[in-house]
Image (cartoon, rainbow, N blue to C red; front, side):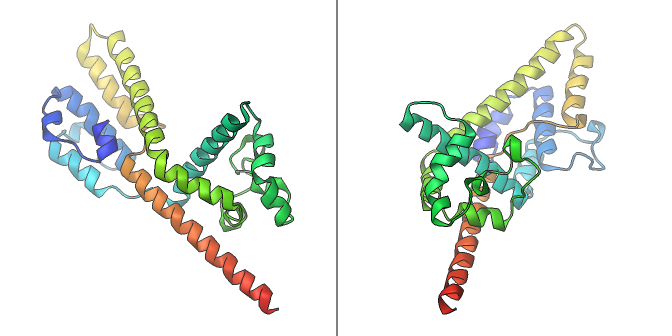
Length: 240
């Protein structure tokens, strides 16, 4: 939790780990920040150390820009929907949420409400792309922009800490079950766990808080770009 929230690992915490625990931590962090198909993917060639882990934390590449947009849009819309349900004191469907939340903006700009649907909702997945055209429409909603900033300033980091805890807890619980299943053959069990971390195709490793900070910066930049584009188009319409 300290590592994912602070983007650092105190020596005092690292020294409390057994060698095998330090291996698990090292290969988990390496899996997160280094390509899985790296030439040095075999555990035999790599040994854990405090210095190596900190180097990984200091040198990781930022998340892809579109990945940041998806990460934040999903969490922001979910938060706004929960706030709306709380104010209405009832659960609402996704369809109803968009109708209520974006109705005024859609009417003002003479667009159907479906134009504001987040592309990764099940009924629209693969039919719309996250691009400037989509964001340009969503950012026309001033209420959405205000709610985004309130969420970023006051709630998103607390939510993210809960998400980090949940994902790490489930991950360690899974390791524990694998370990106990073969506890009579400890060496086999430890190797199996390390192979699980280094070789499995998909692995749900949470974003660090530092990655979240960078994602928010990219999202705010996107808002500015779309607003500037909207202002230029508006000035062009006025001149005509």
